[in-house]
Length: 481
Image (cartoon, rainbow, N blue to C red; front, side):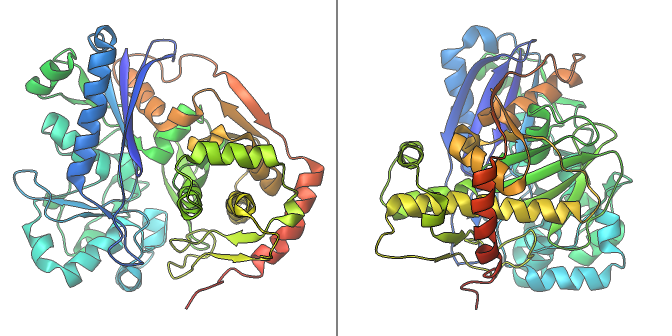
């Protein structure tokens, strides 16, 4: 038995996975995001730990026999977060998250200070990434940065609490933009430009490398064997790919989580220089990953649900699916609630509806959000194709994969066949558990995944969205200052 823990943006999910990749137990705990200003997104790292402990307490209570058989633990987590901790491991300030847009000027400073920045790291220093945010802290909150003994990614803060070990895997760490991605080590000139040294960063490990076990008191608390190691793990996009079986050159997936991601595995390191794309190390040895990202996907759906007074997002989506609204009658929505990364690379963008009328109802608005995310993912596909990446049939994962309507919309907008695996909603946690199994001597993937639905681009839906895409593209900066 292997345990996978995913420290997400909206919640923590933990799953128990057996030797045949069957889910033997799962638990979740919710998280919230603080937005002190419009361009900022923060979380208290202590909330990551509290939610993680709650999920493991729940698994220990519900599945004690399975927890007693855990041979290894894998970690996945939201990427790009910056957590500052003191010498006792206590957070110094709220963590700056992946969709925080404050560090625009600092990205420009880093790009000027380090020639060939994108060729080294795989990405331009966009504001959501850790390197510009650390430079922002150096410029605006130097006392907090000076107090920091360690700078950690979200899942690695949880690793520190679980094991006492300060470590990060080379896949998640490559997305900090503090690394020479091809070489797999921290880059001295970039660290210096950010105002930090290697002593503030965790040691680097491979994604399936076995590390320290749980602290003894935690192992007793959850009934886990005392020597079960915590392996390196990876960021949620890489672990989601492993969970979806994307483990070879040319394979890819779309994730409909809080953000939307189009992810393609590549045996070559192809740095991204423009259009808001980024390239990192994959969790699978020998592979890299090219990524295009929509900053607000299921996050936008949660926003519109709250705006129309719906307490249950799933029930609201079921209403939309039952209504069968014709696409031409639905407004156009640009989903730039937190700015946008691909293809605009502009944190100042704001969202907008267009084509509203007295006939527009709440379900029209919800479907418009789903369509807008699908159209934004079509922009992502075009951006990736411009690099020479092959974007063919894909897996669809994330909480949004539960909606067949959304799967159909994304398939029609992108022109891609999308296979939804049975584990779509737990993909990153499953991927983390699979890395734990690999790190303890087992196979990465134990068998073929059951496909519960395949979304094939339907010509009539594709044509309707293509007509709407022209209006969508005409307003990429709708509402921006």
